[in-house]
View (spheres, rainbow, N blue to C red):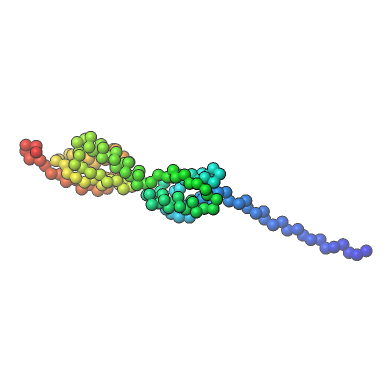
Length: 157
């Protein structure tokens, strides 16, 4: 009798990981750039909806371009918001309250969580009132106060 054939050891290869979903591919593309790292998405078929926050409209357009370049993306729905839009909304809310308090010669610029005041008032009390209104109207701190006190004459002109 011939000897039995040598036994072969069957080595199982590691199973292939499943292919990445469209959402995973889009998120990978977005997370690779600091400008788009706060952007998230969900997918429905080949339509990708992006949401989250970017710095400005340039970053918003860039995020859309990144997503459109991912293979398999057919349509992009942009639901992004921008930091600059948030700042403008805070600035408008503060300006409105300053105006309502009669401080219509005071201007405000909001950048991030900092507010910068400028303009003229007639008294130190009004200058302090502008700071108080600003900090109560929005989650900001007054980082710069360039308001000048210019007293009116004794007749109030």
